[in-house]
Length: 192
Ligand code: URA
Image 1 (cartoon, rainbow, N blue to C red):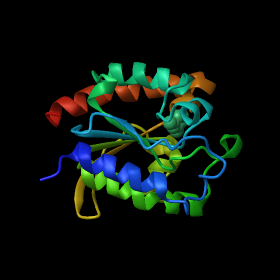
Image 2 (cartoon, rainbow, N blue to C red):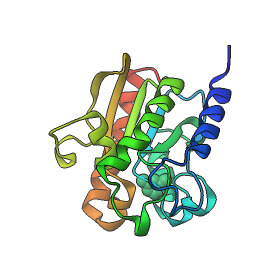
Image 3 (cartoon, protein in one colour):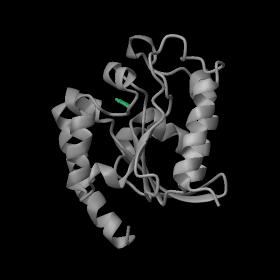
Image 4 (spheres, helix red, strand yellow):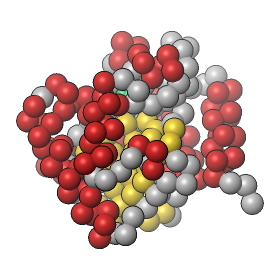
């Protein structure tokens, strides 16, 4: 049987060749995702920024540095999780991804989730939250636990604020730190 690592590499190759991806033309590199391919925790952000677009890796700029610190509050080193995004090419001027873009990249994100088979999905920001939870506001549900069945997979989804939002707003940062400290307890109860 093929390893998850191999399957993810094949999927990345397929994505690299897919000229139909709507943000590909304006972007430098594909940001497929990185981390532990055997992880039971998958973090999903929004989309690559300038640094990620240059390096081809997710969360390598300021928001990424904060994400590393937040993960440590939950007792998680970055190398223990896998990190990807809702869209895998940088939107021009870092604008919000459009619904049709989210849906074009969504078929690959679904495959990433299928291959990794995470127990827990941590969504970072409202776009990745909206993939799993509809009709909610992030201000009302951040840090809460949602047990869902998605494409026949049992997933525990925990929506978190986007680290970039925390960099802009001290109150959001304080709330997010509390959420990640509580995440440590959630993980230990779940034996993750
Ligand atoms: N913000 C995101 O949502 N994703 C990244 O990869 C970097 C910043």
